[in-house]
Image (cartoon, rainbow, N blue to C red; front, top):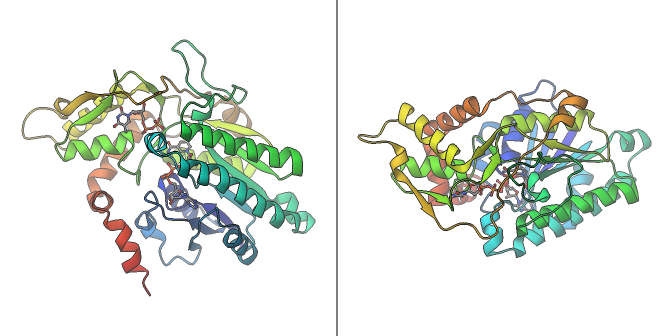
Length: 354
Ligand code: NAD
Ligand code: TYD
């Protein structure tokens, strides 16, 4: 069976990608290399445990020898690079892990992949792809009247997270221009959906609302993000992998600009309808808290290149995607509780002790 190698496939987007990929007819197998940091959760992959098409390996992308072993033993036709430290607030408190994984890790992976790719026979070398999953945050912050970010917008990262992702994008680009490695880069806006770690805005608000806790909105709540349902991001990545032009970058976004306050209001209203409180509205739990340092005001993505060249457009509206997400969290409280209690980390040891 032919394989693809996915890094970070136990995280939010990576796990959704693995599950979506294996649902496609005739899908190649997946080698899933994930270090299992706090953000990696094998419970998110429970649906494919025991599926022979999914091979999980607890691997740090900074470990060159381990990455090379995976490449040599499974001979993937493509590498899809999701693994990263991804939380802006964590990057403000402790940037070192971001430099290590996002910059050094991406470099280490590129080196291993380049050596592997060079040794392939000519047809396999021509067909091989390295797809780098990146973010719109590398472009910095927009003013209200600015046009959305396009593929040619200048890089102006403002947080340690976005600076480390920008550095990784530049390394990926350099490996194409210098060595000819057939790379593709996607820069996507904010994702939401199932298996999202409950420290990010949308899952935090859902889980805190249900727990009767305050809903902390940073600053004035008027920062704008462009929200995309994670399943649509996964579909875009499949399209770019299949038909993207090597060396090109593709912006991925939902055409769904919302202020944080609009998002939190929408969530509260949906929860009021689906799981009403004994009295009052979930909106009563909203509190305004101290702003994030250097908080980017607005992100927005122009995804027209992807639509024009590859025919991709999002299937979900913000309304339908948010409803699916809220319902998923309501029906998967066990997953949430395991994450909140830290139990998911012990589960790996228990489940896989043998
Ligand atoms: P996440 O934090 O949920 O998951 C990251 C995964 O990478 C985890 O499973 C973690 O264990 C793994 N990992 C971390 N360090 C590793 C290392 N050194 N070696 C191997 N595995 C390691 O992140 P996410 O939200 O799923 O994001 C995935 C990718 O998509 C990231 O590259 C991120 O920059 C990008 N992205 C995310 C968003 C978003 O809204 N979440 C938007 C655009 C782009
Ligand atoms: P986040 O999910 O951390 O994504 P990012 O910062 O990468 O866009 O945050 C999304 C937005 O929500 C961002 O503007 C910060 C804001 N936010 C809050 O207002 N309160 C919170 O508790 C969190 C986690 C985020």
